[in-house]
Image (cartoon, helix red, strand yellow):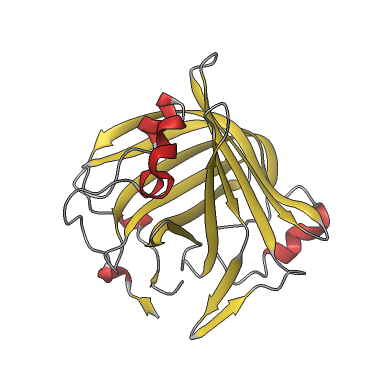
Length: 238
């Protein structure tokens, strides 16, 4: 079941990053810049911060945007859409409330009408198993499958999702589910990281995107999540 935000625990010592833990020897095939980007694990004493622009971001289907407002998941799939959207991302490696190695990301999209936040926690939930918990309450969970492309990019696919509503665990049926496809790499020509994300619903097609580039730095920190990165509740179920 869920835990209150106060259950968040600071680091208990060093550990590999969740990405290195799952990829194993394949991690060394990533571009060197990506290896550095994903290197920090819980207890490393560093977090990352990026600043950039999404060439496009949000829901590209106008008829679908009002329906996204009805989703029981906040700070995830918002109804806005735009081009040349400034954004920031902050990545915090930590242990979650169940002492599982995790990485919490907070993305802020700066649309003309106001900011939108997309937040998630990627957690090592078993040997070689990553689960991504999305939203302010982390109540939408997806499996996360990692592969390294031939040119050293990281590809992340989410083939299965479930929704947690109170005590209920609701796997999303195939007709309602959407698969996420993410590719991230370093563009040596521009000196920037690039990311391309598509969420595809089988009957409708692409329902959410963000695609752009950003600079990235890592900073020292004490291992305790800042208040705006702590979710409304942690989810221990898989």
